[in-house]
Length: 336
Image (cartoon, rainbow, N blue to C red; front, side):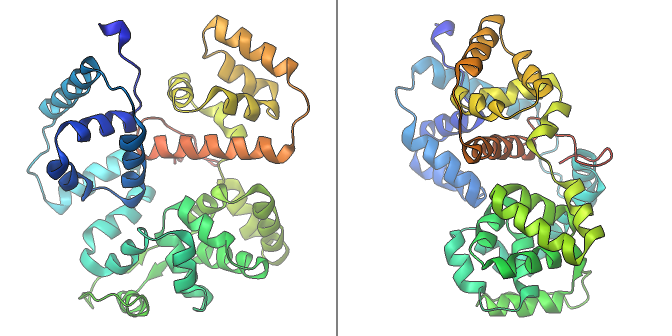
């Protein structure tokens, strides 16, 4: 019966689908996913219990409907890919991704690092020059780079972030040398264009995932040595208070992906306007219960509130990366 079908998240739908098509075919699909996606879907596949026949049919029906609507299959020109990504992501975000897609195997060794845990990456690069470390962190996903950054001594963290913020382009020869350092082999094109990595936005994205106390210390040291650069990074950082700028549909999508107790803890330290933003997107009964719970809630540690806010921001960024919500950028009309 339709009313008995659970509201599954996108990750859970992917898990149901992969469990439905058999081990061999599921393995082939997983080969095309990023490390982060494999981890999330794999966890969902392992933990999702009591999947009903109706839920399987709903997921498979949704998949078939989506495939039937696709019209770009079989088009493989670089021009098509470029126009599609620029149209979807904008020039800035698409540029970095296009470099990785269209530059062939130049970043192969770096891409393989994404399959390693942060401690393993740290052990590989910890003795390298800070510029090498900055390039590696720029190629990692922001949350993974933040975990790697946190393993470095405090005195090195701000230096690495500064180098990430001021990175512009990396020559193919430098990428070749870096891949040799990582003990990876690939063939590069000596006449290729530089690959865009790093920059202010990359530094801001990484810091968004760093523990709040560490983030504050890094920003303080950066502002002491490079005040203007530090302010530019800070302007681009997306913080919990910025969620007030996202549209109502995105708020509702975000709330479906987070725990109620997590949201309650995060809102404990939020402005009234941001609390209203979330409460206004709940049912009247749920909003009243949340208000009552917030009023009855005793003192909580600031670190716990900040951790809850960081976790919700991480979920928001993941949804934004998948195109399920739109997050307003910290400056101007850019989006992340």
